Image 1 (cartoon, rainbow, N blue to C red):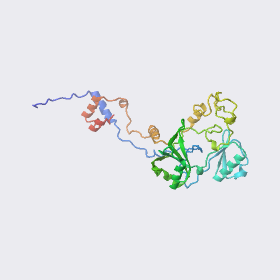
Image 2: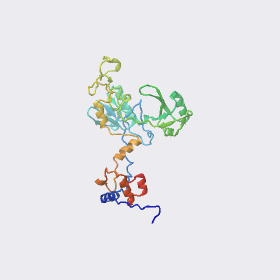
Image 3: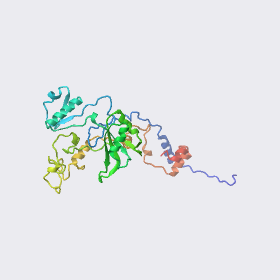
Length: 341
Protein backbone atom coordinates (compact mmCIF):
# COMPACT_ATOMS: atom_id res chain seq x y z
CA UNK A 1 0.00 0.00 0.00
CA UNK A 2 2.82 2.38 0.93
CA UNK A 3 5.61 1.88 -1.56
CA UNK A 4 9.05 2.22 -0.04
CA UNK A 5 7.67 2.66 3.48
CA UNK A 6 7.04 0.23 6.27
CA UNK A 7 4.65 0.70 9.17
CA UNK A 8 6.04 0.67 12.67
CA UNK A 9 3.67 0.04 15.56
CA UNK A 10 4.78 1.45 18.92
CA UNK A 11 4.42 -0.90 21.80
CA UNK A 12 2.65 0.91 24.65
CA UNK A 13 4.54 1.00 27.94
CA UNK A 14 3.36 -1.07 30.90
CA UNK A 15 0.56 0.30 33.05
CA UNK A 16 2.73 0.88 36.13
CA UNK A 17 4.96 3.22 34.09
CA UNK A 18 1.93 5.14 32.80
CA UNK A 19 0.60 5.55 36.36
CA UNK A 20 3.97 6.84 37.60
CA UNK A 21 4.16 9.26 34.67
CA UNK A 22 0.73 10.68 35.44
CA UNK A 23 1.68 11.05 39.11
CA UNK A 24 4.80 12.94 38.06
CA UNK A 25 2.74 15.27 35.87
CA UNK A 26 0.23 15.78 38.67
CA UNK A 27 2.93 16.70 41.17
CA UNK A 28 4.68 19.18 38.90
CA UNK A 29 5.30 22.53 40.52
CA UNK A 30 2.53 24.94 39.57
CA UNK A 31 3.94 28.15 40.93
CA UNK A 32 6.22 29.58 43.57
CA UNK A 33 5.43 32.61 45.67
CA UNK A 34 8.33 34.91 46.44
CA UNK A 35 8.92 36.43 49.84
CA UNK A 36 8.92 40.18 49.29
CA UNK A 37 10.37 40.78 52.76
CA UNK A 38 13.39 38.54 52.15
CA UNK A 39 15.73 41.46 51.39
CA UNK A 40 14.86 43.26 54.60
CA UNK A 41 17.17 41.21 56.81
CA UNK A 42 18.78 43.33 59.54
CA UNK A 43 22.52 43.90 59.48
CA UNK A 44 24.54 42.63 62.39
CA UNK A 45 26.26 45.32 64.44
CA UNK A 46 30.01 45.58 64.14
CA UNK A 47 31.30 46.98 67.37
CA UNK A 48 35.01 46.30 67.13
CA UNK A 49 37.40 48.82 65.61
CA UNK A 50 41.12 49.40 65.22
CA UNK A 51 43.45 52.23 64.33
CA UNK A 52 45.94 50.08 62.44
CA UNK A 53 43.35 48.04 60.59
CA UNK A 54 40.34 50.34 60.50
CA UNK A 55 37.20 48.95 58.87
CA UNK A 56 34.64 51.69 59.00
CA UNK A 57 31.11 52.44 57.97
CA UNK A 58 31.22 54.59 54.83
CA UNK A 59 27.86 56.15 55.71
CA UNK A 60 29.17 57.76 58.89
CA UNK A 61 28.36 61.29 57.68
CA UNK A 62 24.64 61.00 58.40
CA UNK A 63 22.77 63.93 59.85
CA UNK A 64 21.73 62.03 62.99
CA UNK A 65 24.55 62.03 65.57
CA UNK A 66 25.84 58.65 66.65
CA UNK A 67 26.11 57.88 70.38
CA UNK A 68 29.64 57.58 71.79
CA UNK A 69 31.09 54.09 72.23
CA UNK A 70 30.92 52.47 75.68
CA UNK A 71 33.80 52.48 78.17
CA UNK A 72 34.50 49.31 80.14
CA UNK A 73 36.11 49.88 83.55
CA UNK A 74 37.28 47.18 85.93
CA UNK A 75 36.80 49.25 89.07
CA UNK A 76 33.84 51.44 89.98
CA UNK A 77 34.75 55.13 89.83
CA UNK A 78 32.71 57.12 92.34
CA UNK A 79 33.83 60.43 90.90
CA UNK A 80 31.92 60.06 87.63
CA UNK A 81 28.96 62.14 88.82
CA UNK A 82 31.23 65.02 89.86
CA UNK A 83 33.24 64.70 86.67
CA UNK A 84 30.65 64.62 83.86
CA UNK A 85 27.30 65.11 85.61
CA UNK A 86 24.54 62.84 86.79
CA UNK A 87 22.57 62.90 83.50
CA UNK A 88 25.47 62.39 81.07
CA UNK A 89 26.12 58.68 81.57
CA UNK A 90 24.62 55.41 82.70
CA UNK A 91 26.25 52.18 83.84
CA UNK A 92 25.68 48.49 83.36
CA UNK A 93 27.62 45.98 85.45
CA UNK A 94 29.02 42.70 84.12
CA UNK A 95 31.01 39.87 85.70
CA UNK A 96 34.35 41.65 86.09
CA UNK A 97 33.90 45.22 84.87
CA UNK A 98 31.53 48.17 84.60
CA UNK A 99 30.19 49.39 81.27
CA UNK A 100 29.85 53.17 81.14
CA UNK A 101 27.80 54.66 78.30
CA UNK A 102 28.03 58.42 77.92
CA UNK A 103 25.33 60.44 76.20
CA UNK A 104 27.49 62.84 74.18
CA UNK A 105 31.03 62.95 72.74
CA UNK A 106 32.19 65.68 75.14
CA UNK A 107 31.38 63.54 78.17
CA UNK A 108 33.11 60.60 76.49
CA UNK A 109 36.33 62.55 75.96
CA UNK A 110 36.27 63.91 79.51
CA UNK A 111 35.82 60.45 80.99
CA UNK A 112 38.56 58.88 78.86
CA UNK A 113 40.97 61.67 79.77
CA UNK A 114 40.21 61.21 83.46
CA UNK A 115 40.69 57.43 83.31
CA UNK A 116 44.06 57.85 81.61
CA UNK A 117 45.22 60.38 84.18
CA UNK A 118 44.19 58.07 87.03
CA UNK A 119 45.84 55.01 85.38
CA UNK A 120 42.53 53.15 85.54
CA UNK A 121 42.13 49.78 83.84
CA UNK A 122 39.65 50.20 80.99
CA UNK A 123 39.10 49.74 77.29
CA UNK A 124 36.87 51.52 74.80
CA UNK A 125 36.38 52.05 71.07
CA UNK A 126 36.80 54.82 68.53
CA UNK A 127 34.26 57.59 68.13
CA UNK A 128 32.16 57.39 64.98
CA UNK A 129 33.04 60.94 64.03
CA UNK A 130 36.76 60.09 64.14
CA UNK A 131 36.51 57.02 61.94
CA UNK A 132 37.79 57.65 58.43
CA UNK A 133 36.28 56.23 55.28
CA UNK A 134 38.71 53.53 54.21
CA UNK A 135 38.89 52.34 50.60
CA UNK A 136 41.30 50.12 48.76
CA UNK A 137 42.77 51.11 45.38
CA UNK A 138 43.71 48.19 43.17
CA UNK A 139 46.14 48.00 40.22
CA UNK A 140 48.58 50.91 40.82
CA UNK A 141 52.17 49.79 40.49
CA UNK A 142 53.66 48.78 43.87
CA UNK A 143 56.51 51.28 43.47
CA UNK A 144 54.10 54.22 43.28
CA UNK A 145 54.83 56.71 46.05
CA UNK A 146 52.07 57.10 48.62
CA UNK A 147 52.61 60.86 48.71
CA UNK A 148 52.01 60.99 44.96
CA UNK A 149 48.68 59.20 45.35
CA UNK A 150 47.71 61.51 48.19
CA UNK A 151 48.52 64.63 46.17
CA UNK A 152 46.55 63.35 43.18
CA UNK A 153 43.48 62.72 45.33
CA UNK A 154 43.77 66.12 46.99
CA UNK A 155 43.85 67.74 43.55
CA UNK A 156 40.48 66.07 42.99
CA UNK A 157 39.20 67.71 46.21
CA UNK A 158 39.33 64.61 48.43
CA UNK A 159 40.41 65.10 52.04
CA UNK A 160 42.99 62.37 52.57
CA UNK A 161 44.28 61.34 55.98
CA UNK A 162 46.70 58.60 55.03
CA UNK A 163 47.75 56.35 52.15
CA UNK A 164 49.34 52.98 52.92
CA UNK A 165 50.84 50.40 50.59
CA UNK A 166 49.72 46.84 51.35
CA UNK A 167 52.49 44.29 51.96
CA UNK A 168 52.32 40.54 51.55
CA UNK A 169 51.58 38.89 54.85
CA UNK A 170 54.49 36.43 54.69
CA UNK A 171 57.08 37.73 52.25
CA UNK A 172 56.48 41.45 53.00
CA UNK A 173 56.63 42.21 49.27
CA UNK A 174 54.82 45.33 48.08
CA UNK A 175 51.49 44.56 46.43
CA UNK A 176 49.55 46.64 43.86
CA UNK A 177 47.06 47.57 46.60
CA UNK A 178 46.81 50.81 48.54
CA UNK A 179 44.67 51.64 51.56
CA UNK A 180 43.34 55.21 51.55
CA UNK A 181 41.76 56.81 54.63
CA UNK A 182 39.48 59.75 53.84
CA UNK A 183 37.72 62.23 56.06
CA UNK A 184 34.04 61.30 56.63
CA UNK A 185 32.58 63.94 54.32
CA UNK A 186 29.89 63.67 51.59
CA UNK A 187 32.59 64.23 48.97
CA UNK A 188 34.46 61.09 50.05
CA UNK A 189 31.74 58.77 48.77
CA UNK A 190 32.44 59.96 45.21
CA UNK A 191 35.83 58.24 45.20
CA UNK A 192 34.18 54.99 44.08
CA UNK A 193 33.36 56.66 40.76
CA UNK A 194 37.04 57.03 39.83
CA UNK A 195 38.22 54.66 37.12
CA UNK A 196 41.75 55.99 36.60
CA UNK A 197 44.44 57.50 38.77
CA UNK A 198 47.88 58.73 37.73
CA UNK A 199 47.21 57.60 34.14
CA UNK A 200 46.48 54.08 35.36
CA UNK A 201 43.20 52.19 35.31
CA UNK A 202 42.26 51.42 38.88
CA UNK A 203 39.47 49.73 40.78
CA UNK A 204 38.29 51.22 44.07
CA UNK A 205 36.38 49.09 46.56
CA UNK A 206 35.63 48.85 50.25
CA UNK A 207 37.99 46.53 52.13
CA UNK A 208 36.69 43.24 53.40
CA UNK A 209 35.82 43.14 57.07
CA UNK A 210 37.60 40.46 59.09
CA UNK A 211 35.48 37.52 60.20
CA UNK A 212 37.64 36.74 63.23
CA UNK A 213 37.55 38.56 66.55
CA UNK A 214 40.00 41.39 67.10
CA UNK A 215 42.71 40.77 69.70
CA UNK A 216 44.53 43.46 71.64
CA UNK A 217 48.30 43.46 71.15
CA UNK A 218 48.75 45.03 74.59
CA UNK A 219 46.75 42.89 77.05
CA UNK A 220 46.11 40.00 74.58
CA UNK A 221 42.37 39.99 75.35
CA UNK A 222 39.70 39.72 72.67
CA UNK A 223 37.12 42.30 71.68
CA UNK A 224 39.18 45.50 71.49
CA UNK A 225 42.45 46.85 70.12
CA UNK A 226 45.71 48.23 71.48
CA UNK A 227 44.95 51.85 70.64
CA UNK A 228 42.03 52.06 73.07
CA UNK A 229 43.35 49.69 75.76
CA UNK A 230 44.25 50.81 79.29
CA UNK A 231 44.99 47.38 80.81
CA UNK A 232 48.44 46.18 81.92
CA UNK A 233 50.68 44.76 79.19
CA UNK A 234 50.94 41.00 78.81
CA UNK A 235 53.56 39.12 76.81
CA UNK A 236 52.16 36.98 74.03
CA UNK A 237 54.52 34.02 74.58
CA UNK A 238 54.56 33.46 78.33
CA UNK A 239 51.32 35.24 79.29
CA UNK A 240 52.95 37.16 82.15
CA UNK A 241 52.24 40.84 82.83
CA UNK A 242 55.33 42.46 81.35
CA UNK A 243 56.63 43.79 78.05
CA UNK A 244 58.31 41.51 75.54
CA UNK A 245 61.67 43.25 76.06
CA UNK A 246 61.67 42.53 79.81
CA UNK A 247 60.70 38.84 79.61
CA UNK A 248 63.13 36.72 81.69
CA UNK A 249 62.45 33.57 79.67
CA UNK A 250 64.50 32.50 76.68
CA UNK A 251 63.15 32.34 73.15
CA UNK A 252 63.89 28.62 73.18
CA UNK A 253 61.50 28.02 76.08
CA UNK A 254 58.10 26.63 75.08
CA UNK A 255 55.31 29.21 75.01
CA UNK A 256 52.41 29.16 77.43
CA UNK A 257 48.90 30.44 76.79
CA UNK A 258 47.53 32.82 79.42
CA UNK A 259 43.95 31.65 78.78
CA UNK A 260 44.06 27.84 78.55
CA UNK A 261 47.63 27.20 79.85
CA UNK A 262 48.41 25.32 76.64
CA UNK A 263 51.84 25.12 75.00
CA UNK A 264 51.13 27.79 72.40
CA UNK A 265 51.18 31.62 72.26
CA UNK A 266 48.16 33.64 73.30
CA UNK A 267 47.56 34.66 69.68
CA UNK A 268 47.14 31.05 68.51
CA UNK A 269 43.82 30.74 66.63
CA UNK A 270 43.46 27.11 67.61
CA UNK A 271 43.19 27.97 71.30
CA UNK A 272 40.11 26.45 72.91
CA UNK A 273 39.17 29.76 74.52
CA UNK A 274 39.36 31.59 71.19
CA UNK A 275 37.34 28.90 69.42
CA UNK A 276 34.62 29.06 72.05
CA UNK A 277 34.42 32.85 71.78
CA UNK A 278 34.40 32.70 67.99
CA UNK A 279 31.70 30.03 68.00
CA UNK A 280 29.49 32.22 70.18
CA UNK A 281 29.57 35.10 67.71
CA UNK A 282 26.77 35.56 65.19
CA UNK A 283 27.89 34.93 61.60
CA UNK A 284 28.27 38.18 59.66
CA UNK A 285 29.28 38.55 56.06
CA UNK A 286 29.20 41.12 53.31
CA UNK A 287 29.76 38.65 50.50
CA UNK A 288 26.80 38.52 48.15
CA UNK A 289 27.70 35.00 47.05
CA UNK A 290 27.83 33.65 50.60
CA UNK A 291 24.72 35.59 51.61
CA UNK A 292 22.78 34.11 48.71
CA UNK A 293 23.84 30.61 49.67
CA UNK A 294 22.77 31.12 53.29
CA UNK A 295 19.49 32.68 52.21
CA UNK A 296 18.72 29.84 49.82
CA UNK A 297 19.28 27.24 52.50
CA UNK A 298 16.91 28.99 54.91
CA UNK A 299 14.40 30.14 52.31
CA UNK A 300 10.78 30.46 53.37
CA UNK A 301 9.50 29.90 49.82
CA UNK A 302 7.76 26.53 49.53
CA UNK A 303 6.19 24.66 46.67
CA UNK A 304 2.45 24.90 46.26
CA UNK A 305 2.28 21.09 46.02
CA UNK A 306 4.79 19.08 48.08
CA UNK A 307 6.63 16.27 46.37
CA UNK A 308 5.47 12.75 47.17
CA UNK A 309 7.69 9.83 48.00
CA UNK A 310 7.31 8.39 44.50
CA UNK A 311 9.11 11.34 42.87
CA UNK A 312 12.04 11.79 45.27
CA UNK A 313 15.40 10.36 44.23
CA UNK A 314 13.88 8.37 41.34
CA UNK A 315 15.63 9.41 38.10
CA UNK A 316 13.84 8.41 34.88
CA UNK A 317 15.77 6.63 32.17
CA UNK A 318 15.69 7.44 28.46
CA UNK A 319 12.77 5.10 27.66
CA UNK A 320 10.56 6.64 30.33
CA UNK A 321 11.33 10.12 29.00
CA UNK A 322 10.18 8.96 25.56
CA UNK A 323 6.98 7.68 27.10
CA UNK A 324 6.37 11.08 28.66
CA UNK A 325 6.77 12.74 25.28
CA UNK A 326 4.62 10.13 23.50
CA UNK A 327 1.59 10.57 25.77
CA UNK A 328 1.80 14.37 25.75
CA UNK A 329 2.64 14.68 29.43
CA UNK A 330 5.72 16.80 28.66
CA UNK A 331 6.41 19.17 25.79
CA UNK A 332 9.25 19.05 23.30
CA UNK A 333 10.97 21.96 25.03
CA UNK A 334 10.90 20.13 28.35
CA UNK A 335 12.17 17.03 26.58
CA UNK A 336 15.10 18.93 25.06
CA UNK A 337 16.27 20.70 28.22
CA UNK A 338 15.09 18.10 30.76
CA UNK A 339 13.04 20.68 32.68
CA UNK A 340 10.75 18.00 34.07
CA UNK A 341 13.55 16.38 36.12
